[in-house]
Length: 355
Image (cartoon, rainbow, N blue to C red; front, side):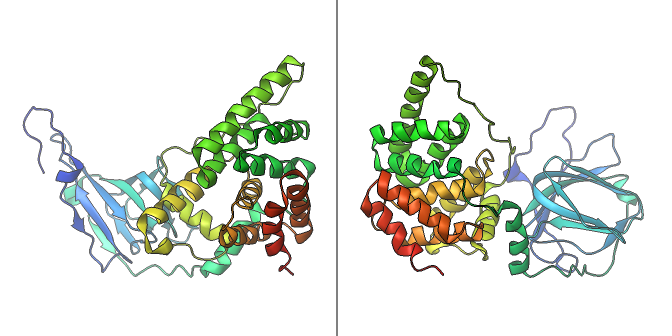
């Protein structure tokens, strides 16, 4: 594509002419589109899109090359050195003649701009395929969950999450007020509680979650009037423009300790909602850690008749995160004394089967 004289031109993404990358030099699906030529420049610019896990062969450019990551996360390696990981916004400069490869991450896609200096004279020399010797997925997932595990018993602060979540799910706002006051007294921050309530709309809907938020606001006003100073706490880290579906697929795989890339219930709508929204967006909000999110989830689903299959899955996630049977039994006691026997019995029926 060429520039059109002195006129400003816009080339829509739909008008870009994508070409499939030569499979001789790539491990899977990748495609590229050459961008309009800059009249006064000898350089060329293109977009290259890599599907999940796809990388190219070892190669080198006679005039060097810039890569600018515009979407997703990927990998790049110089011959003889360690693999490096790159994400959106990162810029890579590969000097002339340097042997290297690049491409998508193990579980993420990646797109980058390629800027080729002196394009007509910039020759690419291709070498052999990359031998990654990647770890089996089971081994990788086992290593990934270690940083999220809790190796100590649940604290009083964490156990205070149980009645907050369950009473919100049940819609018992009077009991919720008591639970919220207790949670704040036990050290939960305001933003942690907000995040607990926020997390619940994925399971019991906006009405319950919003009523919980309104109740929290009333409790905070009353506490402030009585002279109590509650800690606001940290807000979620801004993750920027990330691919939440891929983030959520990896999160689900790590928490469940099995490959979560298959389509859920053979339906793309539910699959996308679960991975992109629940395990993607919500789990990316890092002011509530994975254990506390799962405490929220288990406490919430325990209130739902007919939710035993999902409850069992999330109890297993808590176990994967290091939570012992003794602590799950503490949750049952809280549910029995502060919610109702039906709720506690749902959780008890699952925990009693654990070794």
